Image 1 (cartoon, one colour):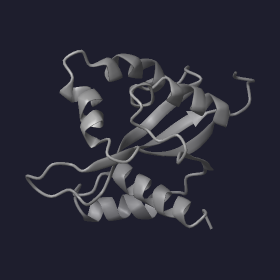
Image 2 (tube, one colour; image 1 turned 120 degrees about the horizontal axis):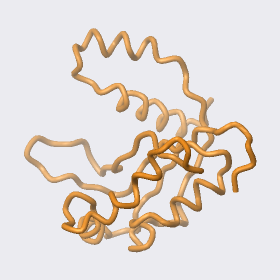
Image 3 (cartoon, helix red, strand yellow; image 1 turned 180 degrees about the vertical axis):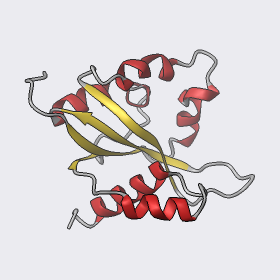
Length: 150
């Protein structure tokens, strides 16, 4: 429960159980007519919620190929919450948890501190928008998590 302390950013990496691509695709938000995943997202996007998502998406087995299908194997999120427990509570309510797609034995939740992105923003300008700034941030965070943020 929120204690009034300052909110922290958390890098969340949640791999899927092996062989869950078909099940993931069944519950994937924009492939479902009932859009259950999106119905629960709005509170997670409001700054007043105990845990909010700033950016997120799928982990992939391989880079995206033009005209090819995405080979998804998990999810990543940049969450904001006061505590790790608030992040976990929010993740437990996610459709990928309730559908048993995510492998909770391999979840990673890291407190992170973003670095100034002037160099990324300058590169973004030089590339004239070919790279999404959020993508650059997520790549940086994932690589830093794998190296222990050192």
